[in-house]
Image (cartoon, rainbow, N blue to C red; front, side, top):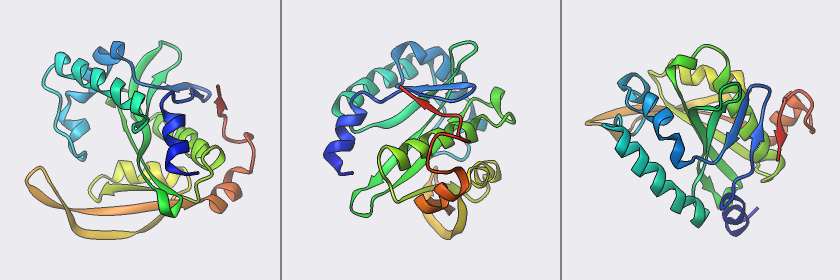
Amino acid sequence: MNRDEITRIFRDPPVLETPRLTLRRMLKRDSIDMFEYACSSDVTEYLLWEPHQSESYTYKYLCYLQSRYRAGDFYDWAIVWRNTDKMIGTCGFTRFHWEHNAAEIGYVLNPGFWGYGIAPEAVRAVMYFGFRNLNLHRIEARYMVENIRSRRVMEKVGMQFEGIARDSMFVKGKYVTIGTCAILKQDYVQLYGGGDSGTGINRR
């Protein structure tokens, strides 16, 4: 799938549903829920961005994202806990490698929901969409090597560890070593099959 097709799709991202979650576009009304976790240094410790300083900042950020959606160049979903309709994180593609038919996936989750298998559930939904609907050949994820929790998510969804790049990024005043895990389409089909069975994912 080429850049123009993916741009068209993400101007109005499809809703993905799992047994416990709804993945949909982020909305301005999510600002309170997003700020709840985005203000936490524990959440952002291994991320590229600093904690949000105010709910107003988060609201302005979500307003900005609406223009990115309209342009079709933002590929992230809100993770919504279906029982309460609360936004509890985000998951989506951080970038596409167009010429290689590959993408990188990223995620962040409210710490109040850590330890319940929610991040892997959301990542599986995005992987399913990437392989099934975007016909990707490869999906990878990167993490700062100290972030063992994130690597466990990658391994739980079937990604394989591929190695590290020492001091390959300069983040928040220091060099950090980055690990990479990835899954190929044939690996995904072997793990989950070619259809919806075993994934618990619906698309609408």
